[in-house]
Image (cartoon, rainbow, N blue to C red; front, side, top):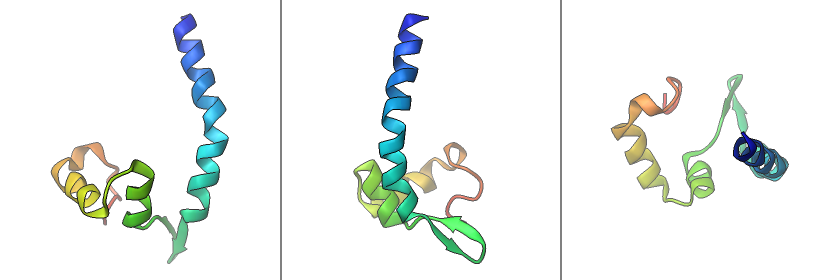
Amino acid sequence: MELFVVLVYRVMATLPALLTRIQPRILTIRKRRVMLDAQLAELYGVTAKRLREQVRRNRERFPDDCSS
């Protein structure tokens, strides 16, 4: 249980910094919130081409509205 508490604490401590990096990259287009693939890939540390490839290969791991 202690390990879980420590992990949750670490995630919560880094959450504000993560949100400040993500929120400015979210665009609203036709009343939908979206992120460009290049910006999302940058957050994951991969190329946009690689990100799109992984979305295609692992559709079940991504939300239904991803890449629609």
